[in-house]
Length: 392
Picture 1 (cartoon, rainbow, N blue to C red):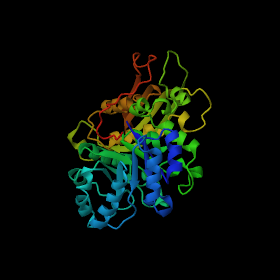
Picture 2 (picture 1 turned 180 degrees about the vertical axis):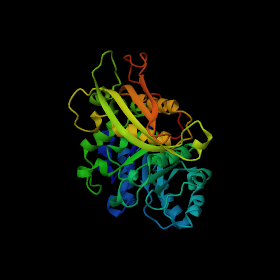
Picture 3 (picture 1 turned 120 degrees about the vertical axis):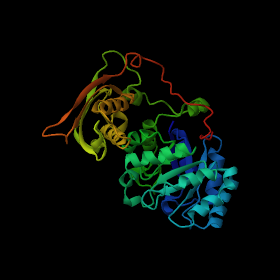
Picture 4 (picture 1 turned 90 degrees about the vertical axis):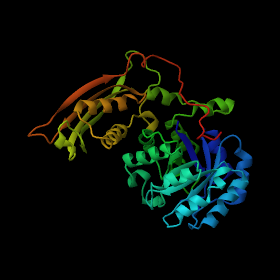
């Protein structure tokens, strides 16, 4: 499951996040840069108000990469009682020394390293974090006016980061001026955490106040962790039945459908059965027609739509993987990825190689959700209660 992290400034905003089903409360001062630390009294007040109901994280601030100073700031937050301590790792020859210096602290508090996609991200540091006992790693953006995370890294590259975290036993998180339309795209990567600030605020002003309605939109786009729902009792977040119906969690026979179309999307792919086709990529064209469960009302926001970016990003992710021998195999992979989305009823995928002659050659397939999976069933998501990567 992907957990929703909300960055808040203190107990008042933390209470709003709590009421609207956020999974992790993250203390940060957005007025003091991308990674500004809140005052110690705000940490104490938030722990008093929310502690025990949700994991609490806090950032150490935008500190120089000096090991003693980093450890001192992180230790103060650990002593205050937070569950996660988030440490920014800026480009500096000493940042690996900082990682090693935090190893002792990582034995008594969950340390999460944060690197910046627009400011010296180094994927090789993930192994050092794991060796030092860190709980997780996140990607963020340092210059909030400089674009979203997806403006700096492709879906395939972000997927590589999440895979690296997973291989090393770390939680993998993504943040960085994320907006509502980014959520379905990033959920394809199955990150452990998605972090938000600006998207939760009035007018998306990250220095303003959290807006409950904005929190509801983001919360509804991320399927809730069933462990949180079971533990929450009467305080568990309310189910957005509008969203569930729109996503098609309950599918009956002859359900009304709409179509999402992707036309003439061309991207280079390593494909082909001949040996010489492994030497360079070929341009491949995709036409995809997705039948989705119709929303019960006119679409109002991202909760009511199936994003065509899911199709485009899915193709990009598949294209970034290993060489594909057959266009039939490629079409099947695209169809399977799309059918995995709960709102999808059927999909038509046409794949054409464009570089083999004067015309295009390819295949078209039609795949439908199985009758068994289309039956009405209880809304139940899988998840291990003993997942060691999730603090409760």
